[in-house]
Length: 401
Ligand code: TTP
Ligand code: MG
Image 1: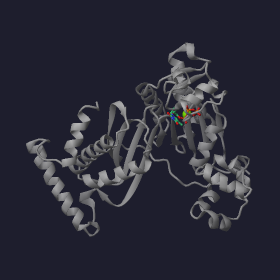
Image 2: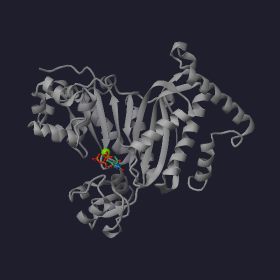
Image 3: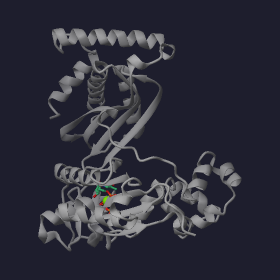
Image 4: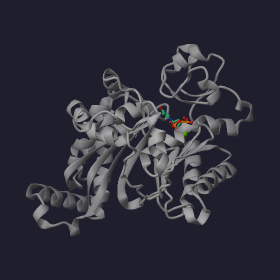
């Protein structure tokens, strides 16, 4: 039976993004196995693959693989160092094309975004037409191909965009969601990584259909909170909304180093200085935020974010630093860092906060920091600052740009 679409969610993911841009810019690379990443140094190079063209993937080369292994698999490949700025420019261009289809566009990485097109489908006539039009506009205006998935929920749309990659489109109408999911391996579901898969396999579950038929109470017994999540994912149930972009939804600051760094003292000092910058800006706007985010980019341009949400919103330097540092300590394993950033989101205006929610000790600190901000404005930065920030500044002077 045909069901009506309650929501129309579109997921757009560019094909072999960095490699495709290189092939676009340099016609000699077209049709060739192109590998973006660290210098392979004839197989002795360190670092990893950012991405590989589909021609190189035939040899087994893929993202995050050590570059030395890629060289073994594909010695005749064309190895190209990543050009971050160029890729960001293309990313912006793609996102602004998407913005013309709906105000609800949520970029989730440099080359992918969710769109809620429920309100704009009627302007194009059908779900198929809006999907084709998105792909056509991207190709005509950038010369790059994108794969598109359209479904009633985010998780199914994401699986669908990957289904006929590259240069493909998959539409999963509501009445086909279950049939579409059932035939897939469970590893396609959101949240099923290697570890969960190994556990599911022990129970004889390798396809989504088998997972769907497994009783919920047994799943919950085995996996705790993950049980109900798996149960929902196997049925395509995902109520998450597409968040549209709002530039004041977060305040962040980042530093790109002139050389890549692994020096823990320097990285930690930089985090402190970034935390100070962010907290001063929050205080100026009388804002506080609940979620602290750490961003790290490695030498191959792969970028990771980690975040933590606090019980109370803050704009205190030491609190923002403490959280971002703990996220860093948990995440960082010693790879050379190219960029590091700190951000605060889930912002609220402190004038609108209920006084009953305020913590007396924190309020005292916040008042003190505001006084410090005023004094700094009057007497300059070097007069008054966190002692640690000063040493951070000295260290960074020589290494950041
Ligand atoms: P992906 O969309 O995962 O990969 P892709 O666009 O190269 O290929 P496809 O979508 O067709 O499978 O990532 C987008 C870009 O992000 C990719 O071109 C390079 C970069 N990237 C890294 O630098 N390191 C990584 O580990 C990954 C997964 C991606
Ligand atoms: Mg991609």
